[in-house]
Image (cartoon, rainbow, N blue to C red; front, side):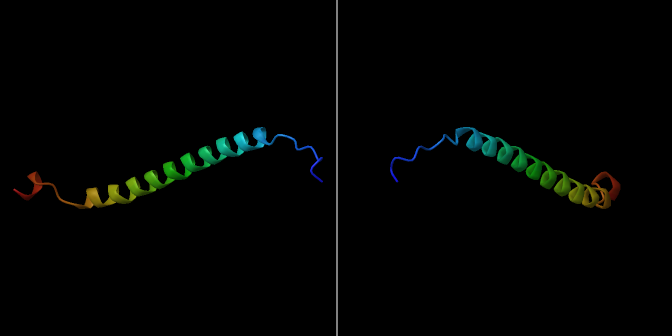
Length: 53
């Protein structure tokens, strides 16, 4: 059993690392856009200091 040769999984590991990093980047980008859109609606509805004078 110990005579079994193992092929390197380095290529698969780097592919997973790159795909995972891209997926996290897309997820974070989506969360930031969603959050900004949510608070942009609040900023439009909130009166400014000059409008209160």
